[in-house]
Amino acid sequence: MAKKMDMKAMVGKGLGAILANQQVDEIIAQNDPRDAVRELASNVAMLSLDVIEPMQRQPREHFDDVALEELAESIKVHGIIQPITVRRIHAKSYQIISGERRFRASKLAGLAEVPVYIRLADDQQMMEMALIENIQREDLNPIEIANTYGRLKEEFHLSDEKLADRVGKQRSTVTNYLRLLKLHDDIKAAVKNQQISMGHARALAGVSDRAFQLSLLNQIRTEELSVRAVEQLIAGYQADRSTKKVKQDSRLPEDLRLIQDQFSSFFGAKAILKRDAKGSGQITLKFNTDGELNRMLDAIEK
Image 1 (cartoon, rainbow, N blue to C red):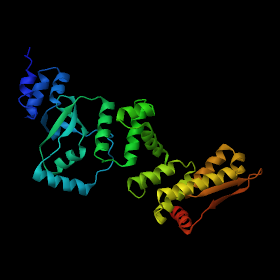
Image 2 (image 1 turned 90 degrees about the vertical axis):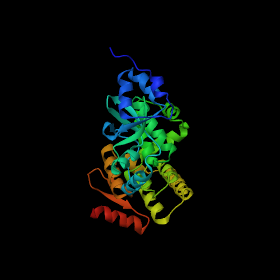
Image 3 (image 1 turned 60 degrees about the vertical axis):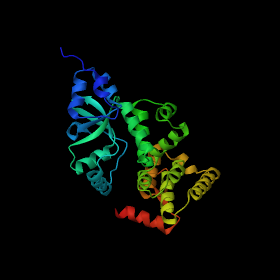
Image 4 (image 1 turned 90 degrees about the horizontal axis):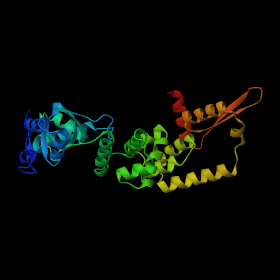
């Protein structure tokens, strides 16, 4: 039986010592893997790119090609300044926790191996670590953060409070991000593309009428409305709805209300469906500006 190696003697020759790929394999193979990885966690190791794989469904959804090329050029000159963080899956297989952008750029730069920190982490811990690292670096847009919070909450059955504790945020902060997941896809895209701010998105998330959401999105884009202005429009809209009871909706059966909502969503405008006992009726689409009318015409043409 192979004698266990003295990890502290091998790893501890200097906490900053850079371990080669072969040394990492040797340490893990001849010791308890979990104990070995714990010892390696405080050291930088060099791993071949061939044994590293990206995280599945990582928090960051978009990588800018131009920025990657620029990073690759920088790596060619200066190397990787901040090591990539990985977890060990099994022998000669590691998965990225944080640093996929550096990993991709290293491939473009033609590197054979990269410096890494090796960690122990289960699926939940891995996702949490990746999310926290990206948030701290401000690398994620609000929708990417919201999607990751949603995945953590659903996959690991966490309450908003538990989730907030795990990621080190206020519960109200986590809840506000989760509310973004209910927004129309067009609004999510506008947040991702920085056409509207997180403040705009939070205000729109408080509107249940998806057609009104889309109408406000168009106004924000065309009129460059501030968050405060949007909040005032929403307050006026909600006050108007509470004073004017729309009896039509209450008379419509569920299947017709669904059709009415589909028209509203498709055209991005308030749709009103009326039908009498004989089955005849009409659908009315309301618009307030020429811009809203043009958007409806565009929807028809598409």
